Length: 377
Ligand code: NPG
Image (cartoon, rainbow, N blue to C red; front, side):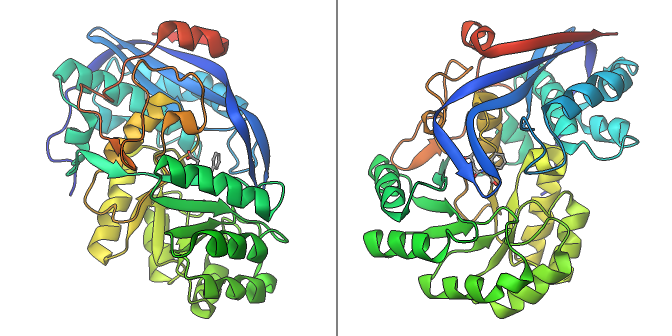
């Protein structure tokens, strides 16, 4: 379902960037490391019609992808923002094309595009969900559980999230912390909807270990191999009964088309940051829907800005699998928006207000801001 009604253009005056450091309620461990603080960049587009907000979901270090806080901070100020500001008026649908000459840096582009989109939709009194083509007013909520001290600790942590009402559990795995962890969760909780995420930690030489996960009836295994191992993912997928889902590898609609053509995946995780924006995310959704491939909405430990936008995206019809749009308090004691996403009966509500549908809590934002710059026309 392509965007049916484009948004109005806005007259850009300046774009402000802030680096935030938000303490996590508990450490988050994946195959690539442990985070205790979420470092992230917030984007404010200042227009003659008012402000719009976006979020650049890079991390402190280039461990999940090649982008990181200060690569985004640099490329945004040096190239992306000046290119946009030189245009004066810009429509959200034009942003990706204006930024396309600059290779890569998709998360930086996505955060800037979201800020422009939010400003344009707020000026129009229209919600992001309506604009993207949302068909639901709430979405089921899954939770991503980091690697714990041992399988017993994992069972305790998962139990806590199930008690809170999360309807699907994803556990992080890495070599040496896979079969036993998964077995422990299955034994403790029976047939709960369960999936695993390797964050690129394996190679084809680990195929026997990964095949040992087949007996746990997982919904899927996410990104077992490296980002550019598309052919190896196809080889692995042919060996496994568990569906292979790609995350890191899917950096664009084109990458999704290629991966599906090569049978490297039968499920796709969509993250707007990873593919360069919410508009490209809708294109990935559309092509998967046309191909009969289920998708779900991933998460990058977003603040209330990206979390609200993700809830809108995940309300599109092709999102037939439960995603990682969890409540804000899964990660943060204090969010930077006045109405953080909450869990209600295992679901989160799709915001209906103008733009991303949430307001910034200026005090909370200032409290976690560690750096700030404004680029003017
Ligand atoms: O709920 O936002 C969330 C976290 C979901 O596990 C999650 N994200 O690999 O998908 C991932 C992982 C991640 C988070 C990756 C942050 C990189 C940065």
